Image (cartoon, rainbow, N blue to C red; front, top):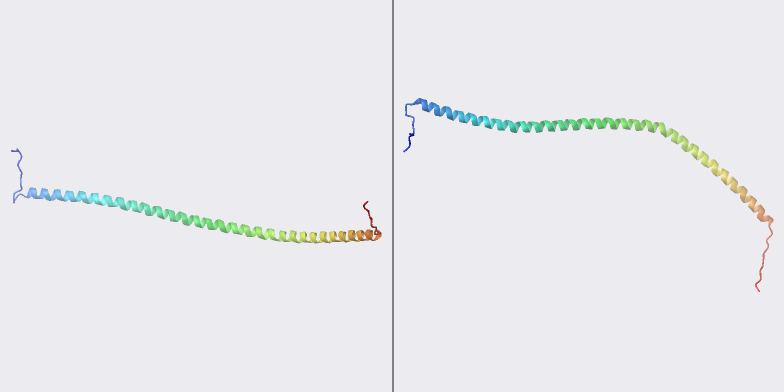
Length: 135
């Protein structure tokens, strides 16, 4: 047999009962601490994800606001350029049209003069027919 014997607390031995209660409370406390640490890690991960999502949303909103500002500035610049160039284009267009019309009338007048000269020369020619007979 063994040299060890099982010691059972007697009914009146409060020391062993207290020791058992304290050890049970200690085990439960350690288990509770472990559970709370693991829950805090899960919560901290979720908090980090939540913070990252907030940063992404804030960055997106800032970017959209900046894009809107740039769009407004570009539209203003385009309107200014339109106001500056449109009158000059109209002026150039009217000048070109006038030049085209004057050139057209000049060419038509030259064609009339040449036509009249050709008709005069044709009236001066006698109509001669050359007959060649074959042998």
